[in-house]
Amino acid sequence: MKLLIDTHFVFWYALGDKRMPTKLLDLIADPNNDILVSEASVLEVVIKHAKNPKAMPYDGDEFVDLCSRANFAMLPITLADILTYGTLDLKAAEGQHKDPFDRLLIAQSKAQTIMLATHDEAFSLYGEPLAVVFA
Image 1 (cartoon, rainbow, N blue to C red):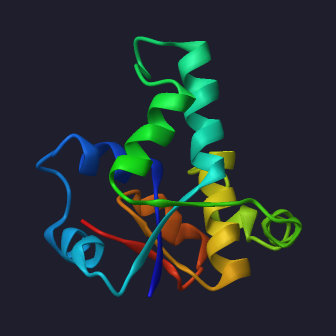
Image 2: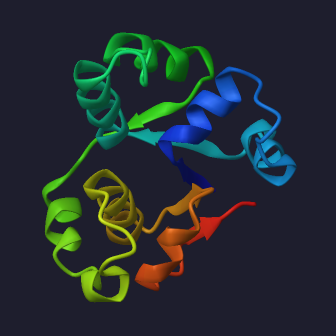
């Protein structure tokens, strides 16, 4: 299975955070699964680090290194992903979720038929079945 993981899960996994769900740890440990991190997550980290290094202490290179050390592969952003972004039901999440990076992850999941693992319950507002919330 291909599994796209949300940005915060990269940090939680790499730092051994206790909030990392056991079921997701099992999926990551399964050698039959391809664990992916979106280039959109790299962009998110780069932007947040530049804006507020105290809140985002990792820069893009450090984030990519964390992914590499965890054996997570980078998922490129494709034109199909960008066009799929335009098909998301943004009105369903209006006023409750506005994060463009999260939306791009949802679009990638939809366009490339990849399960998306997140801890953010707001992802479910879009009604996309491949976006799975791990509590």
